[in-house]
Length: 79
Image (cartoon, rainbow, N blue to C red; front, side):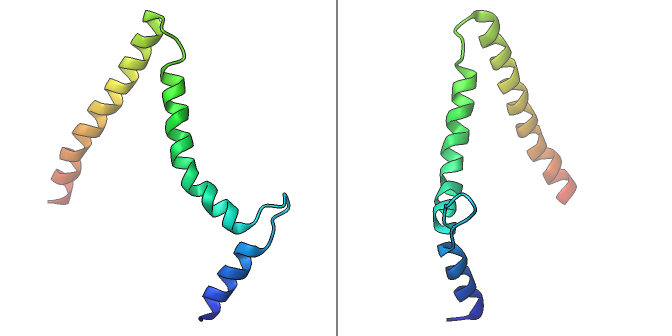
């Protein structure tokens, strides 16, 4: 195996200051996507109050419009 592979393997098996190994931290990196999604869902559903739902709806709508229009802007810039 290459030296880089050996160093990565050793680094994954070395505990960090809090006792976690690099391999465990790699698993957490994959988990971060699910946790971030669940956090967003939680924040968006904190309240059933109409005023809160309106704020969430406006924020999501604004982000959706920005994302949709940026595709055309990026294509225009690239060509």
